[in-house]
Image 1 (cartoon, rainbow, N blue to C red):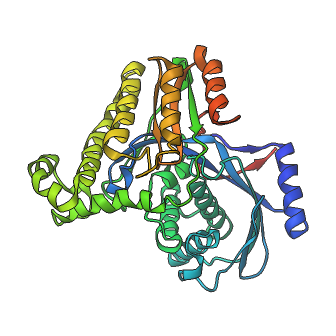
Image 2: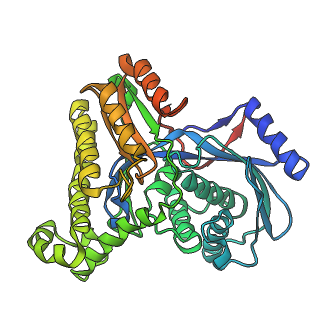
Image 3: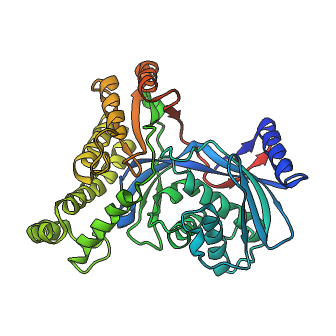
Amino acid sequence: MSALILSSEDKQILDAGFAAAFGGKPERYFSAPGRTEIGGNHTDHQRGRVLAAAVNLDTRAAVRVNGTDTIRILSKGYPISQVDVTELTPVEAEINSTPALIRGVAARFAQLGCEVKGFDAYCESTVLPGSGLSSSAAYEVLIGTIINGLFFDGKVSQPEIAMIGQYAENVFFGKPCGLMDQMASAVGNLVTIDFLDKDHPVIEPVDFDFASCGHALCIIDSQASHADLTDEYAAIPGELKAVCAQFGKEVLTQIDEKDFYARMPALRKACGDRAVLRAVHFYQENARVPKQVAALKAGDFDAFLSLVKQSGYSSYMYLQNVIPAGYKAHQDVAVSLALCEHYLNGRGAYRVHGGGFAGTVQAFVPFDLLEEFKAGIDAVLGQGACHVLSIRPQGGVEMQAE
């Protein structure tokens, strides 16, 4: 993997922010990328398969060990977060807060034998919160990469840093997330991951250049608010867990698809139709991921695009993570999908991306349509709603100053 170089201009920006926050100069610089989910919508929490990539938007930090037992992190535009590393158990008052993520990452490193000490960090990010590119995972991976570099001689692997981030989010932050976001950010590049063995996920690089097929990778921000949608997101794994409980299992990957369909009449009565349809989506989507990987490896981009569209249809119809229950006036993700369909006019592909409900849409846009596509999207959703991205080779890393 090539080194990630911090330009002199970006270094000056980070140095100035650090000096204003903490005084003096930082000692080291770290970065963790956002991620895009290429395939496997809501499969990771069922220990399924995903296809994901790190992108060229990141959260980066200027860092200095401070000689205390307090981690102090100032992210541009936010209040400073301070965590006492002598207290590394979950704090109820910190649930759903940034300090919970910091404390959770530090706690897991301490459990692994790392002597975590205090440090100061000034952060800036191009992974905008709510952008669907997983700013929280990038932040967790960044903190893990910093602690690993400062205090543990890099002993923890990138996949392990991802699992540490998930642990922090599940146990300290209070969100029952899967592992895809953290893994894609930590590992970098385009990868397919099989989470069947939760302690030893199988990670396989996928060598493919989307630009070589004449398409841009775009993420469209629906501009919707995530407020009051926690229950919508939690309902998906919650309903699937109810289905699994009928079989005495934990996740759907432990249940044969034939057995699921054989028991469907009883499952509809016990769990309700939406839960059953969401399970249908999982089985279809989980089978789609290896087909997408095979298509890319074979250079069959048309087949890949067809599978992307199928993923989008399944998410809309069966997973039902496009329109929050009962919403009429605001159906932002649905409008975004409609715009993609209109401007692509049968070419490329598009789908709901990530968690859904109020997040983003992904589109593969032919280069000759890109200008018109971007202008059309921005005209309706707001300037800058359509982001043109590229895949980043590096995951969570220490940057080398230019």
